[in-house]
Length: 345
Image 1 (tube, helix red, strand yellow):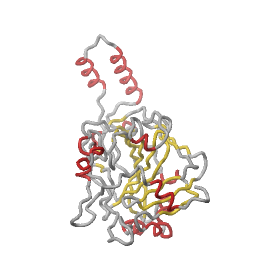
Image 2 (cartoon, rainbow, N blue to C red):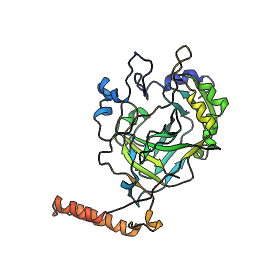
Image 3 (cartoon, rainbow, N blue to C red):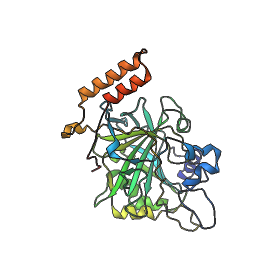
Image 4 (cartoon, one colour):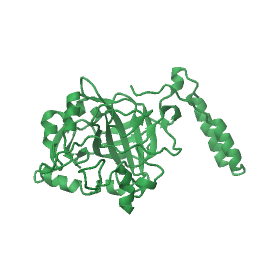
């Protein structure tokens, strides 16, 4: 941002690329047709992955099927020691906070090979407390979900290019729960003076002096899997990282979110709530975690044994004299991991 640019002008520019113009989470007006999630892949050939993709998001996380990966390092957040500014929008589908380009926030570590740059913070929430998150945990939804969307700035020049390219996106997901006191970052986004400025579609409001570190819960534990964008065109280019603790907002703040409209002031009021895509089939994808349950006395391999198992697998992979059947049997014997009693606190 500079002094000659207004939030409204910036809003028109930023909303042009990431959100295709003609889709919805639910029926907009009775008697009219705007494609809801079950139709996304049918109405536009460019969106066909929404229907036929095999690595779609969100998913239901079955904690009994997770695999402990000892090589997953903690997430590293790099803000350059600075607070940031950005513009919060009502897109008609989400509350969206986009940082101005002068303030760069990068993450690395975890499942990432490259550094990724924060592009957008997006909120999903429900019309009732028992729904609103896109991902489920053992079939249960949370009241909402914060998604921090990052693109691979080492390989690609911008978000639009990265979103359709391999290893393009990393999306950090944080569940939201209702409590008496709120997360300090959400307090900045959802206080009355701010949230009432974006009541209607295309409304925008400038925020400054934000500390991105405050949106993260106090944990280094996470779950990760390979998936997709949860909006059209559903490109399967995203690595998801789900933090192991939620962040909190107050009941009044959730009520304020539910009063946001999908439409402009001259149109009928339709709440933005329930802006979630239904969960998609996992299709045998691996869900990994850095939570080592052997530390709790569970029957899981320790780090040293796990590293030996990986070395043994790599040795077999390098041995071209071994057949695929023998390799598969050896891998299956080497990696047997059972994780139980997982929950997000």
